[in-house]
Amino acid sequence: MDMDRRMFTGSLLVGAALATASNAVAQSASHPMNVVLVHGLFADGSSWSEVIPLLQAKGLNVTSVQNPLTTLEEAVAACRKVLDRQDGPTVLAAHSFSGMIATEAGVHPNVSALVYVAARAPDSGEDYAALAARFPAPPASTGIIYDGDEGRLVEDAFLRDFAGDLPTARARVLHAVQQPFKRALLAGRTTQAAWRSKPSFYAVSTEDRTINPDLQRYMAKRMAARTIEIRSSHVSLISHPREVAGLILEASGR
Image 1 (cartoon, rainbow, N blue to C red):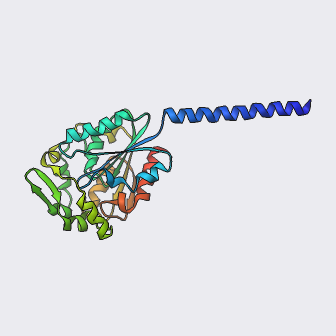
Image 2: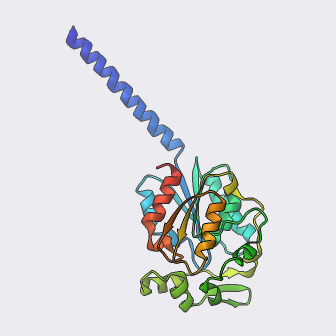
């Protein structure tokens, strides 16, 4: 009888454990933690390719937005479409110019946290150019050229000022696939500042020659972001993917 009782009790415990595990799996399946990544100027969605597998290895559902780089309104709309498709809490991570996009689109109800990677973080209605002018101009700004209304970064500036800590061969490949942006994109202003209502994280690139590092520190402090500093060029998401992925994982609660 004692053996039967112990076996019965053990079966109940095993059954309870299996049921708990089954419920956890079901909840995880219905409410996955997602990450949406947005790229900036002089790049495309593949600029996150070093970070993506690190996040996927932790079980996160990752999507990299292909930003149209036409107008701020159209770029925000493209991001919102991706956010609409997410099932459950979503970390929205932005690099460089796309901080403008995250700041506007980040009020989306699916967004649980914002991560800025050497990114713009304007306030609602703020003139970002005027804000940036309060700090020394970064060297990369002199390397932008225009073909009509389309802008791009020349190769010398790209290698030296945008991706300065990457091997030259790697940087040249990235330069070859850079997407041109429309002049109108730079004229846009955010109408909302998601960082005022969402938990925010910021990765400062200390050797950045595209966005002044002190400007990055200012924006991170203003938003009371959890901040890390990476000894990196502007493209820390490529040269230091583990540090960037680690901050995104922290934002996700992993």
